[in-house]
Image (cartoon, rainbow over all chains, first blue to last red; front, side):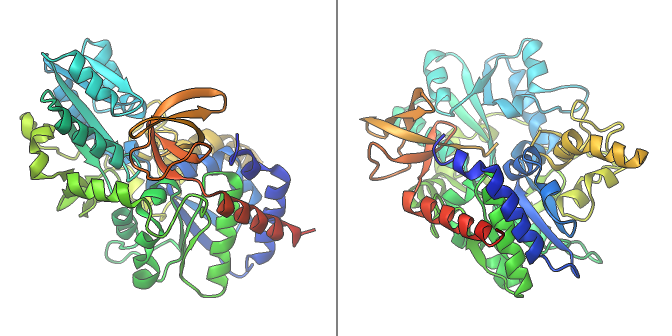
Length: 376
Length: 74
């Protein structure tokens, strides 16, 4: 595929890894967080940790929307799906996520609820037109990439005068979560030296959105594409900045990310959504101004207004170390639930929920290696 | 979740709509979030929407930089 394969060249990857090995100061440790779950997945899929020197450590961030969505919000969707008039639709990733008591949207569908998997949110418009007697609810999740499409959906519904459609909005904001990671609770130190900034989120919000992190926290950010060479180059750029005691925003993914991002998409999001005062993230807890809700002008498309829903309540496993894992303070295997009983088939915490979560990726790709090391 | 793929615009089919080629498979996509799109442009496609245009010149520059970094190791 054009613009993909060239960034997967194995020989170049090995040479870049050599370059990083020479760059890295053996006298220090580099802890770099890839925020985005897509990056986490790519890091493991291409075996990047094995290519990097031991003192360049990748820490896996909270950028997996299905992982960080509190179970209580999923339970709201399950509650809606049980109403006979409702057709609940969402992305495939969301349907598999387990709620409490062995429930999930897929399970609810097997039990008779009308739940549909969408590729594009605009398919909800067609569903609403085809079923005028039903209530179509789009369970919207995701970061700044999926938010503009949801905004288009709401605007089109408004233009077309579709009244049997609403959105259960759970869109969250990347910079707010990065801010939370760099603001540890009292007595704890920030465990991150720099960020690998997300690729596709940044195509929308632009590289300027990360300016506060070098300024306020002294941490460099390098936005990276999703291919292995992109990631290696970004790691090299971060190591270079740290060696020079610099903290700047750099853009490795300049083929798709501009300083201002996509102004049209941003304006549309601004028109349809506003910030919530606070939103609970699975693993990070309450984060101020970190999520979006539908503006009062579009309240008739807001499922939270249209239906009477129970207030979301948090219930996390008390031994779960996700908060520390998501902040880079612990490795997944340092949690006592990891592997037994918390596994991708039976996730007890946020990071085990999808293949983009830190614990699930670690479980899938690293477990064998750890077992071998233990035997040695 | 935020995965997206570069696809080539092969036809503009209506206001805010285009036909895209994704490695041989063609499908209609929404391009209403982008202005000044032309046939032959590559775009980043996510949940049916083109989020951003790919800049060929910048892609080439990145590749040259990568090769320069790698060449230092030979």
